[in-house]
Image (tube, rainbow, N blue to C red; front, side, top):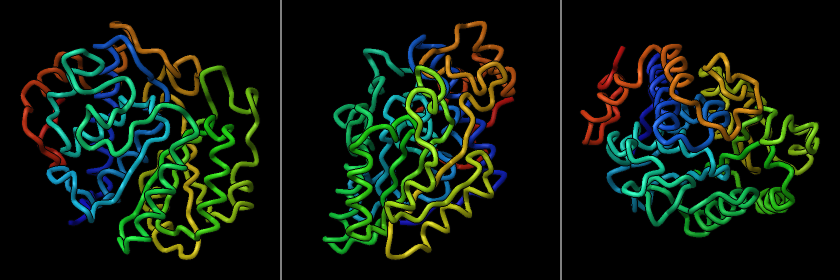
Length: 300
């Protein structure tokens, strides 16, 4: 099983597709979260299209890397990444948050092929990922385990219990990624419950900390490679991002945490991303098979 390892240009193109997916999914469903999915898009794209060693056509492959979004509410980006990577047909995205679909508002292992563990309750994901990493080591499996967390989620005590566990057992097959967009549902993270200095706290828990611009593809590639080279301790990538990244009227505004764009706002956003809702819909309706090639579905 091999990693895809897309080029920088291919990664940027794929991230554009993902952002279009996010806006269109939310516009169609009129339900879901906007800000976090958009801030997670770039590092999520690097993870799925350069780092992960997975075979979406063999979901039970024992050698697969494991990934888990502890911030389960960002399903627009999770499902987009999965569909673009080939876990299920792109056309399935049309069923987002619909009774006839398999893409619930929060990830469900029982409904969506490729979801390893259901999520949604914040604070639990790192513990889940520690179990994956510890169990993999016990079994002699060389896989990597990746856990995506939110910065507001760092206010949960269970995160730090798991951090102690991972450091104590030197789980250097575990990589955490924190979407550090500085916003949560009620406002600025520092105003709700301050977490700074976050990097120093993770270092104090004996993790290797990689502080990086979460929208710089080249820097993200180096960050993941540094995590792979680090031995004897787990790594955490502190991805400094902007909530609502890529949409002018959403950027850095906490009010878009859990609000979908209406039809007019969505068309404006998609126009900024170089497409329209009709063009996006045609792309998905025409893709009922799995595909992950860089430019196979490009639309203007």
